Image (cartoon, rainbow, N blue to C red; front, side, top):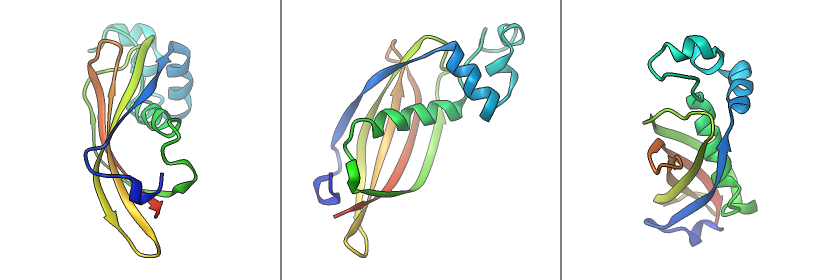
Length: 141
């Protein structure tokens, strides 16, 4: 979609994806090698009673789900900011995640572009919010 097609209050819902234990440990081994993502025995004795996904993985999955809707298409130029990131509930193996995306700001920029800011709210299969954050991107007009 072009910048001019976006408006404040617009809402989109993504498809869902299941987060497996294997994807959690694979991601964490490379990008967030902490015990709560990798060591099942130690994680069981911790606050979350088992392995949980990295918050960074949750952000990546939320963004992937949004991009895969195809809404931006080839009109997106680049991301410019991520703000107000909140990890609200842990993501466990076999949680199924989906994201609700709400346009919260549109601002015209120079050179026939506009800035679109969306609020990503990601939920598990129990409809519990697990993540929330603002994402701003530069889009062609």
